[in-house]
Length: 423
Image 1 (tube, rainbow, N blue to C red):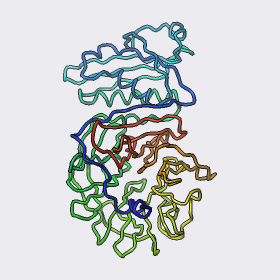
Image 2: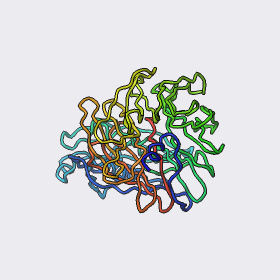
Image 3: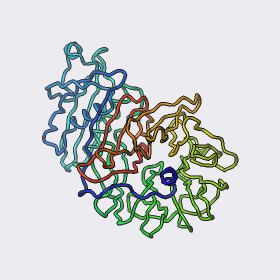
Image 4: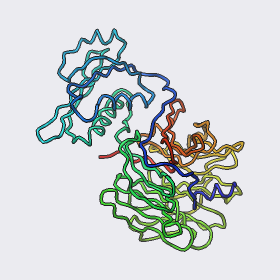
């Protein structure tokens, strides 16, 4: 069991059970941040005539973050409505959001919004954007991102996407959705397992491993035109792709010469280079935030632990020392933290390591966690776990205070990867 779970980073069979048809993800949030900002969000003028209620999406985003206490105004207020700041301050709101959604002659919508500071009686932010009927949720996510950044001081990541693998009956699907699980699109269907999806830094491509050739092969797929490229189809296992920060290379785990070792390859599949050369298993490579190092899982010391080496190869230094079994390294966007899965007392759980100090924090209380992935702003980690004996996705803030779970009514979802900020 131990060796099989470790080998999951090299070749993994989907551990799900048969499920029902494709469904949107349902989000349940638990816990709140250390402090919550009370914010009133008025109904946007004329939004009821639009196919999507923009304010409902904004409220859900901010509530899910754990950092905001939503005050229901019961009002409809456009961005031009005169505001009595004292009234809103008296109702306990530190900030007020107002706006409008106007249908244009070409069928698109003009979405306008303002963020007001009720304490200082001042305008904090605001903008307008044009969106088609199918892009109103994205427009709402962008407003939520702006509110989050102006009030928290960190860029919001609501208008980003996630990818994950769903198993429904005999079918595996690589799916892409908004960060809240809505707007699901299928990138690939297969009757063979799909594993290890990884977003390119520009958010236009996803690398993954498919077993459709009855063996693990690494592909890169363009999400715009669905064209895909074979990146690694060597003898043995081809697995665990991850992108360099500049998007020019991928790190891989290949067993083409016997033992599974770490390699790099250009994003078009050329210029394969072997970086490790041991008699053990070297797998799950991940570039550091600056691209200068690669973190990876190795059993060179007896049990699986996480190591770091130069991106060009060479000597490796051990990074994890607490616990005898640590796998699946993921580096935070600022390069200061490392998320990973640790097995302790028979439970596979999500941990976060401060790389400089060596201090770690357990972030989950479940027992079969897998595949951590940072949000692009570094404030949250998404990972796979189990709920009711089915695979589900969970999200936790890096301080462990805010948690929410994404589930479907039936079927298994695994292998999450959180996409980058979109331009």
